[in-house]
View: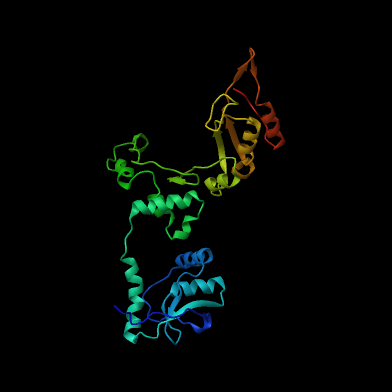
Length: 281
């Protein structure tokens, strides 16, 4: 089979040389144009604008508008001089509709999204909105997640969904559960804390950190408990409300016939950070 035409080169044309096709039936919302612009910034120009010889856009109206918003002077184009007028008008439609006719393997898609999320990649750049990402990355299948809705008489708080067949999470995975956010990450890292808080400030923090060196963790135990606590509580000013309360559950350590106040250095450090009114119970 011989193709009638294959572009020999990509050219760069100034934006003022290009014009939108006046009968283009495809629409581009401000939000979508912003997504396209973000994609261009992240990935570069991966898809040239397709134009006729007179500069009329055949495919790439959204990319052209995104380029204008980014303040670019020129864009890469492929000139389709081989098309007849009827073919150009038809391709304006076909270029969009043919892409819409594709589907998704949701299992593979979810796996790729989880992998990208684990690498800290901004999933908004994939084009999926927050609701779509919440569905795709949920730990339950949609049928399982909505099973409790079938019987309105059931109390949602009492309904336990079946666990996923192959539960997997990786560092960086963000789980959205209604109004709740759960991040697989390190609470001593400021970026992780900021990501899970999403700009909000907490009125109450309740946490149960490791008790001194009572537990044997996979890392071989806690060598410097004070350093661990300073790392975990060093972000309080950025996530707590001005009148926020911090409740910390600590276990007692009994050694040589006496209780050891191993938390004293940490409490002194907390006071240095401006926290007051400590109480033990």
